[in-house]
Length: 335
Image 1 (spheres, one colour):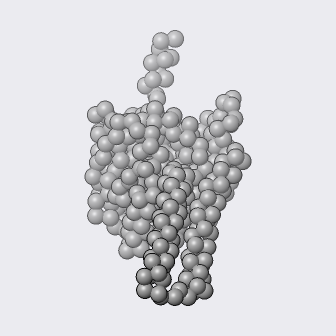
Image 2 (tube, one colour; image 1 turned 135 degrees about the vertical axis):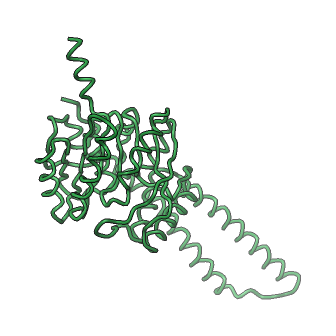
Image 3 (cartoon, one colour; image 1 turned 180 degrees about the vertical axis):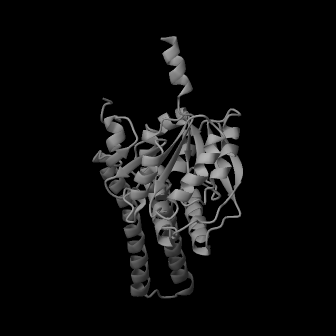
């Protein structure tokens, strides 16, 4: 009995790599070839969990090829495109390691930096973020990233670092805590910061994109910022209240000013002009506030459906998972 426990402990996966894949066909083989020597020099047992987020290229075929050649490569094929952060969640649900590294598949997150993250984590930290130096992204990507973080930091109660992304290492304790957060609008690094735990940062070199191009343009970054803000903070609602009070005060002061001018200087007021301007302005303000409220109501509606975060189409090199891992639903019991 003791021997079986000892063998199981010795064979336990130490590090899981979780990487969401979309348009990754051109870089998956290179990712594997760079990951394996790094991990073999670091721990005895590891796994590489590649999550195909319904990539339209041949990414899943390459994942099957790698998994057939190396059982340490695990494949998760989602039934449709659920988005990067839901794909990360699927990978975390299927990861078995004591430590889990989340990284992009395009090799801008360099595998050679993993030992430094792992070394810092073993110093007593449960979350270690990679802080990117000298970002190799194009101008539009850097601009969209800057806008995202500026908007998020201004309109939320959590301050984020734009040089920090999903590239990180976390303990299995953190992964278990992440598993309890099943909101539909997800932001992995923001969730990690909300969870707390002992956190550290390591400055890393940001690699060149091996192939393809980023799907995060300016419009998508702004949309993600709005979704993240309305999912994580009610500050926009508070701001709409403050703006309403401010406009009431400004209107009262302006009315008082016009009355005083009329009685002290005899200046007539053109009623239709001021009424039209005030009506258009206040009407626009009301519509904007209704839009903010509508966004929050939409989030409540989405969450009330209790739909799974993702649905898997196929699993490769994995033991039979529980229902939650197959569907990403928090409401299913473990079989």
